[in-house]
Image 1: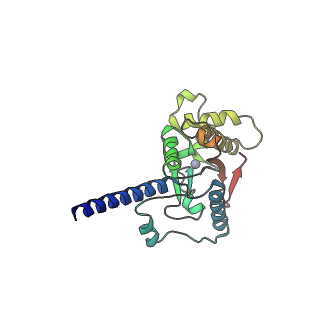
Image 2: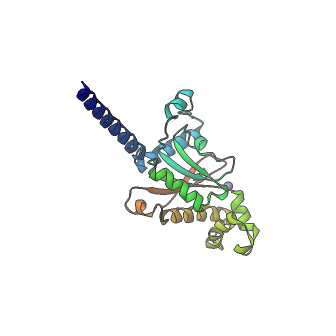
Image 3: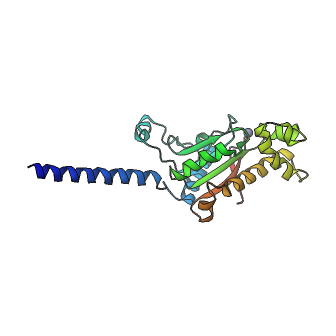
Length: 222
Ligand SMILES: [Zn+2]
């Protein structure tokens, strides 16, 4: 009897270990490929542009479903601008998108670490850098200051984009918005945290610019 109980305990412990391992593996496993994830985001944006939103996963049932763990299919670094909320412009819901928002959608070390977490621990396989037209932070950087040393951390992060796009034909703010998205994409792709996964093709970093008037996200070339 005692021996049987011992065996049962061993079996129960083994089963517990297997289920814990499965749960851990599941947490790290990607929700879907980068291509699938990007497709979902852009389809949602098309619905938003057309005013045919489905508002998926914005229910109490979804809240309960994901309360014990998140498994977002994409990460988005967007500007804090109140007109550019990723869940809205991609027509998605709770638990879908891991969002980092900061004025000017710049990537300092805290931002990089946050995105790194979504990739390494939540299984995200696509990270989108989402700039937007007429971005106030970029306007401040373009119009504001002559020397990078004169400004705070946010404008200092934006300075390389202003420098790189200076003198280019077209609107200086639009040019700097695009250049900033490209530079942030490059910074993330070459960061110590994410570069290996980008090189191996496991992770895609993409960039887009949101149009405040039409709601459309224009994807930038990689
Ligand atoms: Zn902005």
